[in-house]
Length: 320
Length: 283
Image 1 (spheres, each protein chain N blue to C red):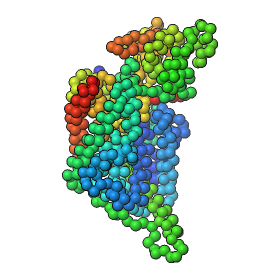
Image 2: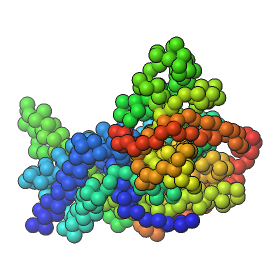
Image 3: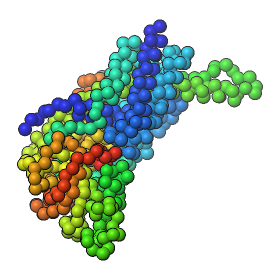
Image 4: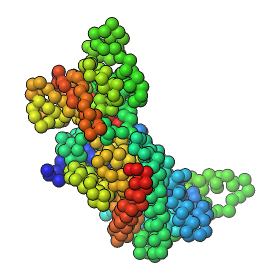
């Protein structure tokens, strides 16, 4: 059995599919980023979070519930939030938790696992995703921003007044406001475009590599690992990293791996939305390479350990 | 000058990307790539990127980047080298993909991803295009599994006086999808066993010349997450089609239980090549 068989036909088909699926969300994230840059003052953003760093990280992990963003669109938004003065630890927590702790993903997990303890699986996925995102956020909070963020990103900006700076004459206030608004819209679109191009470049490279592995690796090679709990967890996390699935659909794929234990499928569901081949490159638009590698290793270990110990206990207590 | 060249390149990247998105949408090629829920996003993205690109290209002040942030992090976007790389990676790769992609997988994907053939692996799946007019056979089953079962249970056997009331093709064949057969429950399996069922799928060679796999691709978001699912077909005389050829199989499904899961073999009376259905993917 060949473990690797490349086909251009499959590569182009999978590559374009990833592009058509991911680019609209990057565009949406970039437009939101542009709007935040132009219209939302830094004090409003930072004012949304509690003063206590710990509480702020806890709240950041839950932001996906009211502001759901998938893993493709999250990077430009987090970049803009950081520029607006949101603490890096909170930004990273939101970035990692949002593709899991959000209503669309929760409902898709429930639907996908119909007949296979849907509420338990969805609950564990959200719980572990949130917990791990918070832990990573707390660790990031102890590090220097300069050692994590790419050059030029670690200085939070203060909002600058845009629009006409001429003191309004009596009766001309509304015109000033209109000019100011139009200028802001232009600024928002321009910022969004630059964010979009900056992020999409990395995404394309990630999509090409993901399409290669997605179509060429023989997935049946991992089937013999299903009988071993630890190996199956590592195999499923590796597979989720390679497959580069959308966080709203990965539960449907995980549900089909019925030969694998529940803990391994849970590891697949938690690790994939936080770290995969495409995200390596998207994260590189924001973080230094060293941090991206450390994040990947840290997530692999923490998801593996938590699923291997806590999830297996919970599943065993529920008779799985 | 450098800013103008960079701006022009960035604008071309946006227009090129948007044009590819729009061409896929209007030509219908996008149907092979995405779940219908996501297709409008391709249209919207195409329109937005083309508009922004054209505005950027024509706008006299577009090259003058003004970020509303004090510490702008877009300096790289304004470098000619970066814009050239961006054009190459984003625009050229998508144009190349649109030129070389055949809008379908080859048989290697079935080997690499494995194929689902038991009902246990399909739990939780509700195939939403099972009754869509885009399907080759226009199956008369409803979208929802329970309604499907009710419809089927009420069907009379062929040859009875009520047979004329059956919905479906006039020749008495019941048009179903691969997923319908795999998900059929116990009472329905018995009902199907005495009827002529017609299923369309892609031919994938089996272990012998009288066996093959009738395969369909099941997707959730996009083709990158496609999982092959199949029904094993047995024929009395050897059949030989190219791998992934679209075929229509008419025959009777036979179910057996192995390890607690239903195992299905379709005993085919006829196998004939057909054109690909409008919706090649099940979702």
